[in-house]
Amino acid sequence: MVEVKYSIGRLSLWWHQRQNQLIQAIKTLLIIIITWLLLSKVDAYAQLAGAIIGGFLSLLRFGRSYQEQFFTVLYSAIAMAVVAPLALTLYSTPWLSGTVFVVLVFIAFFLRRFGGRFFLPPLFVILLYLVIEMMPKPPLLALWLASAVAAVVALILIFFIFPIDDRKQIQSNMKILFDVASKISGSFLMSVKNKSENRLFFELQRNYTKVVLSLHSDNLRVLNEFLLLERDDKLENFCNYHYRLAKTFAMLFESCGQLLKYHQVSDETFSYIAKVMECFIVVLRSSKVQQMNLCITSLSVLKQQYDKFRQYPFEIDLTLPDSVHIFNFSLGMERAIETLSLWEKECE
Image (cartoon, rainbow, N blue to C red; front, side):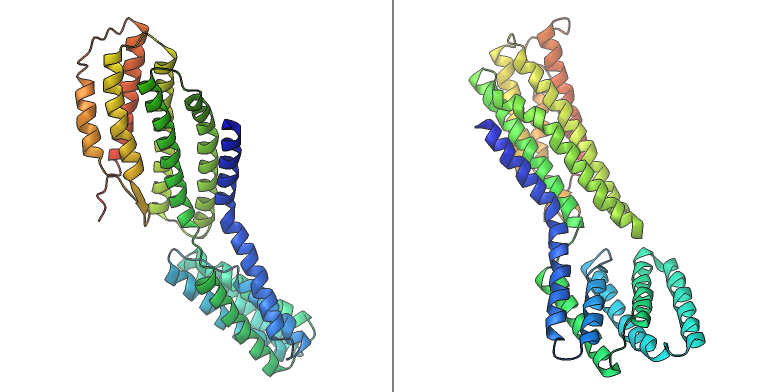
């Protein structure tokens, strides 16, 4: 039964990390197909040009915000609508066509100084110019119509039917980290209350490393895609904080495992540990991620409960193995509280 749960969990994680790419691929395919069908009665070559323009526009969703992404695609569509007729008109005059091409290349590299999202779209405009130069020539009016149809279809599908934001992937990965940590903590708390080893806890703990590495790899993928275009310090800090939290939780869960494996910890000590873990679970379950901010709630209650535990109102002797494990748990919880406090923010 446990293995089935892990298989479902791994499949769910895989889908969670790949759904944006799948949606992007489906969206590009739909833009091409719909544009192709809408232009089927116009002209065969204009139909082909429209499908190419629509496919290019589907890849140009660059920008930190929804507004920036929208205007990037819109300006790219306008540029393509201007460049395509130019290529159609000037192909019979090689020297003039070559001059326009050089000017387009200069503009593309000049725009790069304003940020990465101003560099890649002009390159696609240049690529379209070359494609129109080499393909059979449709009527000028048909080409204008193809550009307009492709732009409208692309804008509607990208921003109104299938709006996606890869940065939300990082926010969602943070939420997954908190959910996984909450499940492991809950399993440990159940073991403490039942005064027995819980096989589920150790299985979840072993699986935790795989999940964390997968989430970290996914964060790096999204982060590198954004840094390729322009630096985003807030996004980078959020990814670094995610990784730091993951390592801190791992240290805490390792100390929890040591406590369960060593059976000489007193019931009184476990009662104090249980109270701390209950507060810790409340923090994990109640905290929220929104707009690249982590809203930590109920942390003050956890701090108060931990301060009571940190006074060690029970017998402790660091020369004994059980006391060493208790101290390791205390240190792990202290690090977790300190790390959570770095991004503490009251939810509105």
